[in-house]
Image 1 (cartoon, rainbow over the protein chains, first blue to last red):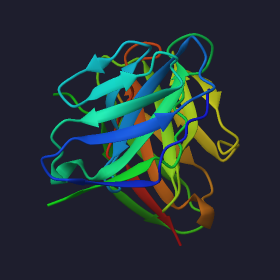
Image 2 (cartoon, rainbow over the protein chains, first blue to last red):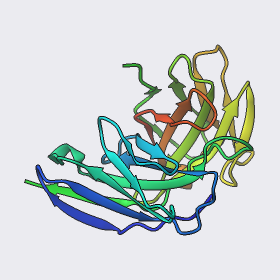
Image 3 (spheres, rainbow over the protein chains, first blue to last red):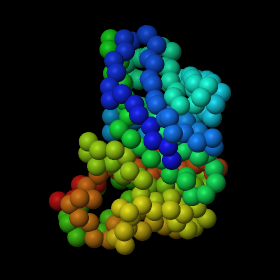
Length: 113
Length: 113
């Protein structure tokens, strides 16, 4: 699986958009970008994933650059409950035995009142 | 909304004792995983399980570890002879189809004294 690089921490004001970047310059053509988050000591929570098109769901939007070497997770109106570690993970979606998730250190997003 | 449950939430055991950590995955999931997270460290993959067989295991998952799906609903992780370094949060996860998002349980905190 391709390696990802994320800033170790970010701050965001409550109610504002949180934009979390991720670099994955070695991503392969069949690898997807997944985002998970972990609120303190809880189990990781799936947020969103995408291949090359931008994606949106009820939790967030995912913007992937045209060359697919980086992406941004957007939480449109951050709340205090969005304070968590956010993980960007790149992996194939199917095939072989690569079903596991490989977590890095992620970005600690702190939403401030 | 269906969710993954894990029991117990906290287990304290003495070094050398056997422990069994239990998980009830979402009922229509087919692929199951165990991960662990030592305090302050990254979430690490242990093992994946499909069709009553281990699909993949990490270097951490040595002969002291085993997994089982004894009755079609529970998914268990057994550590035969616990060591101090096994102290961690253990997360169970499942997914419904190859490659799609994994849903995690709340975790079991294992403390080995």
